[in-house]
Picture 1 (spheres, rainbow, N blue to C red):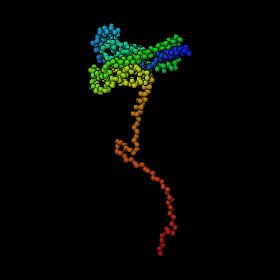
Picture 2: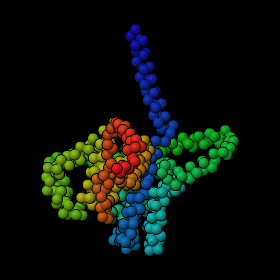
Picture 3: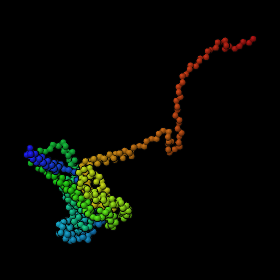
Picture 4: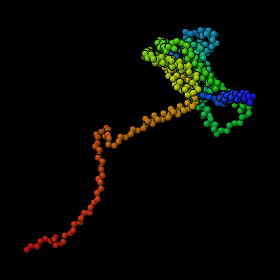
Length: 398
């Protein structure tokens, strides 16, 4: 009996382990996951970097160009220590820099739209890497996360949803509906299946790395805050609101700083959300946590003047929303738009008769409604009896 129990226990453990391995293998190889989330990342980071380049267009020469205080010679010395590379340092010509800047704008726009995403994702990563490495001390911290996400998005199939590539594939599939599929050899079919499996595995691994990066970012930031005395005492946000470097609107910062209790509670809530974030991703509690983090990043953008960093974090949080959320969201938006349109176009109800006279002219007195009288039983009218003929003759004279 004991021997059979010892034999059954390892077999059960082996079966459980084999089932888990099979499940993980199926998740990695069967189908690409989070295609809508990958598309949101592509659109979000492409749009953010395009806005960033357009915002800094008047100051492009002072930040990245030949007239920058951080000269190309200093950048090359830094590259020798860090191993970075930038296409902007290949030439010191102003015309070359202007051409690179225009190509960066075009690349960001096309990557956001999802045109030839496989190629544009690589070019977008080169653009972000080059501009980040050229003037690493001239921009804020938001471009660090955009740089990491640009490198990770090269691994993903981020152009299969909400892109020009997806539209082109749909039109091509509609044209080829009635066309007969050409016969392929066994080697060609195996090669196509291997390519599909490889693309699926690389995409799923890329999305897993992106999710792990966001979890590591939040967890490390929360644990780092826990070690500080100012965060433990609830005064950290008070000092942040009084830093001249992070006060784009001093009046607004002063107004918020007057509410001491709310500022302390916001500091404690920030630490709690960041520390607990990696542990709430596998339940429904992640939705209120993501909502609170959205409000936190909007507050950072408004109070500290870091819109690029806040936007990068908000887009990164979208990776944790399932595909069914993105498929249901357009239907809800269209339904809300139809309801709003129907309410605006609905004619006003006509007022009840006899309540308000017609406007715009003299009031016309309304005829009173005729009330029918109750019917009565009519008696027959008596017919007068005719008199005799003699009574109708004139009297005789005597």
